[in-house]
Image (tube, rainbow, N blue to C red; front, top):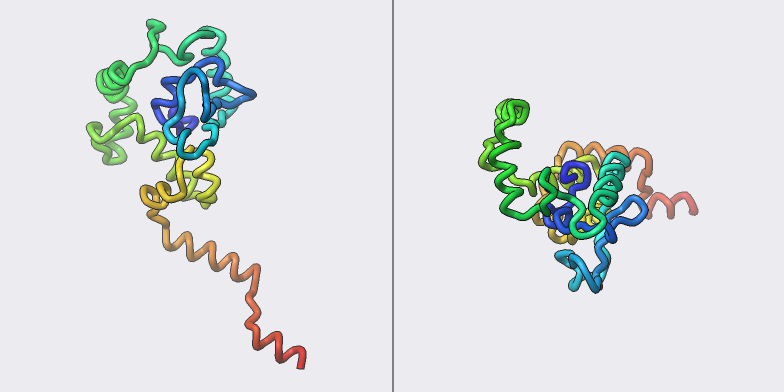
Length: 183
């Protein structure tokens, strides 16, 4: 779910059946029960996590299985906690041969890997693909200021290409050229 949504690990850990609405996980900013998301009081906006069809199917399965309390559970049907997430991460996932091979191939140090890296990757991919920074702030439940601070490493060559495509499609006529045509 982290890979599919770019959500914060804590958001998914606290998701309950009543948070699921029409293919989305929705955390009300003024919720009377359940999890209140990180920036709710500051923004006074709901946190909406959009789900791909694959994620939606999984969430619906989890909601049926766990209609009360957290919908995402361990194999023993226990709610996820920060401790059991960290243990599963270190002792199981990072030791899988396919994961180790991927990390080695890409020069990634396993000790540097965190569950939050999925969120960082999702936001970076969105922005690197030319996604709008304001839309990213809405999709990922963060501020434009935070995105500029943490993800402000644009590809200068790609920016140049995008500018040239814009400038070619939208030539700018200087004011003096307009005035001379009218004379």
